[in-house]
View 1 (tube, helix red, strand yellow):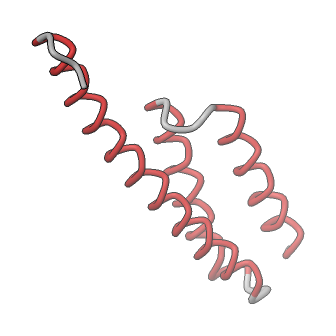
View 2 (cartoon, rainbow, N blue to C red):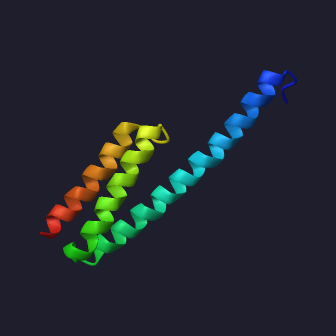
Length: 87
């Protein structure tokens, strides 16, 4: 454990950031599961808003640096491909 004031502060900050990042990632996973479940029903009109919201959220957390932008792009591409395949 750190002893200097600045090191203690950095430790506090990193713990807060880790908790926030874990929340963002958990929310993203939940959103992805909902979108994938909607896509599995083969109903494009029901899946489209969920996919759109999921893509927006993935972009949002990629902009924050929680996940890499390449991963965000890959996730969005796969979702949009599945949505397009529905018609």
